[in-house]
Length: 330
Image (tube, rainbow, N blue to C red; front, top):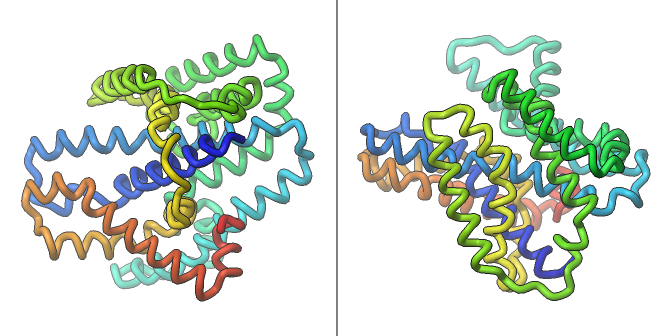
């Protein structure tokens, strides 16, 4: 892979992680928000929401660019280590925190079967549903490869599943494999058939005209997605392409810092520390309408800083434990 493209992916993943932190920390319920604030926040949340499909898109492109050389058993072992084990471990870590919160709220501790079910369904660390869906996709990757070899038919399958989702309902089954399959398959198709033009280009020049066009089309999609569930679904399916093009602005940046490569850790631990970031922000900036608008950047910034410090400390104090809980991403 071209080194500039590799750096671009790191920077893009870091930005996507920041957008995800916004979704799960900057809540307007914390503030004295008026209608103007709520409209601004709605737009910001749509922008941030596109990080989820972009993660699926990039993951598929990266995997299927070289999947022909991978054996199924080796893939499952590798993905169990890099996805399934962290998924289970972080839910186990969050289990006592959630149960204590439930008890202090007047509830009771869950039974053993309920605890097991909550761990497997990611109820203790809800944001990790993405990892569960991604792992399931890898379980069926030989089937996807067979379909990918039908080069002319595969795009029609993507379109067919897209319209099936529209028919079922643009908001139905958000955390399911079926919902995100079109954008994942799109990434797989590009990675499988066009990896040479995406990852292996020897000389790369930034095309600013393409970036401007991508920004314009993306803004149009954002506007359509405001108060329109069908527009939001289409935006989710198409935005990863534009986010990928816009990310070309990172191509000429220097090699990213270590903390920028830890997006997976930030993703897994965000719910543990989000309330801390919220409390710090509210103490400093208060609950005014202006504070509510600024919180869209302020709270995730504080949360990201906390997570960076935790990652650095954890990796230094117990590098093997950090490597295990991040699936080998150090």
